[in-house]
Amino acid sequence: MIHCVLHDPNDSVAVVVTEGVKAGQQLTALILDEDRTIQVPCAADIPLGHKVAMKSLAVGDTVIKYGVDIGRVVAAIQVGDHAHVHNIKTKRW
Image (cartoon, rainbow, N blue to C red; front, side, top):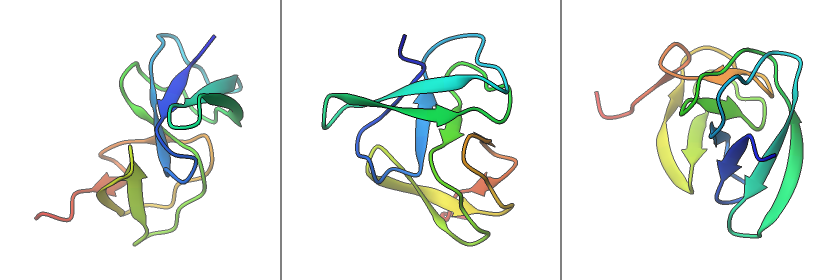
């Protein structure tokens, strides 16, 4: 089962595409550009359509989703964490 998707292996986050993702699960992530899967541990419950961190990120780091800069980290994020508005902010404002 595919739990999340990302375009490039260098993306910081992947989008959860299944319901019921829970902390402690091992997630299967599909890398679309390479048509291959990788495993990532899940550290938090993550709702459908939200992001899971594919790598650890420090405050100030840029977050890449689908190869695009979507913002900066405002609270440290570890691999498998829920990445959302509580720890990522847009650079536009």
